[in-house]
Figure 1 (cartoon, rainbow, N blue to C red):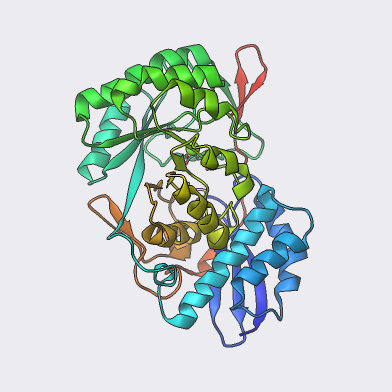
Figure 2: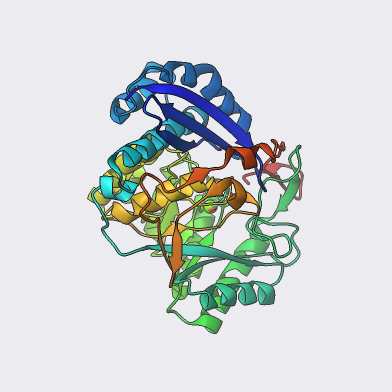
Length: 402
Ligand code: KDG
Ligand code: MG
């Protein structure tokens, strides 16, 4: 089964997505997600200029060999652009393998290890009351796990708060928007905010919170302690994630479970976090961490050390990526939870999905492959729309982690 075409589509149905289409000589088509929020065209170029020409004529069935070819063959290893490009190829080839076998991807990965995938939704608000009402909506719709993010009184725009009633959308203007950050007010407010959720909703719903890399290790340790009584499912990205050693201090000082990984792109980024049991959940995504092939390797390592999965599932990963995540979630033994932010309109005009949501659990569906088809004519109606992620500054004007 030879690859005869590899094409890159850049489309913005509500936000920018980069999609790889691989076609084989027997007419099968596989889709891969190559979206790297705010740096989309870098991956599109990496694919078009370097990867697609080398795909033509390759055997589409040799997924592992193709992965090794592009990882080892480039010489320049790892990095978000390279690994997102490799992921797109890998996801598309698994899609093709599923279609050739007439099976959904999760069947090829060993079959269902659970009936459905527990997902968490994103509650947020410009005030505590607004966030609690948003949280109530998720509980009413059957979610078993909800992330709570809220504007901090006296501070400007903070991460994770929806503008109006829309889904939270971090990339805005072409040039980065500047946001402000002060650690003190956040550290005083966050425990009160999470306590308010427990007061209103009790302890039956899983409660998550994303710190978005903004604290020092000692500040994160203190926050972890301060929220212990609220029994979080996890505290996400407490410190900038490239410093694996920082997690030791946090770990030694709090029993609040820790989750990290959305900015990682390889197993080497989380090797020590996993093998030294410094975290509870690994949150790498299928499209930024080398595809199905590499994400399964990370999750298998995590399983050995009692670390559970919690794949990144923000709306800036396309439905192709989200479907691939659901298939992996269905099949791995150490599944924890799956983020489900949803996709802004009109993404569903371009990406036709098969997944379902019932009682807080999602299922990828039983269509062969990923179960997502891309409508290229619809995609052409939404041209690329340059956007950037925000930059954070402290009150003294210095740049802080966003
Ligand atoms: O592009 C960046 C987003 O994917 C990220 O900010 C979302 O932190 C995020 C999350 O947990 O979904
Ligand atoms: Mg996050």
